[in-house]
Image (tube, rainbow, N blue to C red):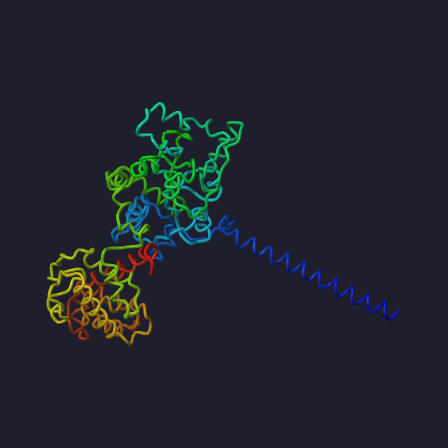
Length: 489
């Protein structure tokens, strides 16, 4: 009897053990699904953050994707249709612009609703399904979807009629064939509806959300996939670079392209609609649009350029020199590149009204003191400029925060060490934190152009055009964010 009881107790323990394992396994599996599926789930309750909060923060955060027409980096400068439009709109609202780059197109609605950004600014087709989750702005473009396919290899040697015979010239030609697109796109939705309308199957191969339109078109041109579907305005400009593709088969009726905001951002939606409608009525809008979607020569030139940063990782021809002389400095070379662009836009022969010259705009006395014999020689100028920047950094060793110390150093490089010291003294006098640049010393250097401040007894070096160093730091760090997205550290 005792032996039976022992076996029964052991059985209960084993049973309990397995029950616990099942419960733990079930919980673990559920958590794993939640984590891996995050990019495909949209938030049911978007955060509350509207125009009032955006103005208070002073920043409009725009979610977009890399695109050779919408947003990219070329010769050290952020460019693109969406980027230029956003710049003008944010200026009109009176806030700074911050680009939030989505690495995966499938995740942009999720990013918007959870508060990673305030607006989706990319070529987003208005669909009924999307309108359930987000609010669209007024459309800024009407286009249609087109089939992208590769022409026969010998297409230049055969007649147009014979070329057509080898292409899908009607949507019915896609029946029981495969078209490759990303899933969370209007292209996927359209192909799904086409199958239903045709009463037969069009097979859809789902491409990863990380792949860009440009990469997908290249896959067709290279013969890696047979078909894809792209908005016609994008396909048109890419055809100038990939002449072997055909884009003549229309897949949809006209569709409206717009940006989008959260459902609970009515104030932002209203002001965006107002500004977009106003901008669309100006010649500026057509100039910007034609620059990126009609100028085929410049488009091809950019894609072939060594300084189309998305493809090459290079910002300018001076990258290696900057890396070489920042190596012992402990700074990100891309940050120094941003400073150099701000100084000269990489023009070795640039000269300022004050007499500063070369890539880092060295003053004659500074250049001479650092042993520069030719201020227009890139290596001499960069070496001397970085040496001088390091000296400024060493002057501010009492600043505990490294980023703030860098900002003090850059402001000194631009306006002079003495003027920044004056701004620091004013900050201390008016009970501010003299060890912090942002919302501290920057305020007083901005105001050193006013007599009340440059005549103050604590000020030693007098008047300075304070808006220059103030905006200088902002512009450099804004540009640095772009460089971090595209150029490898």
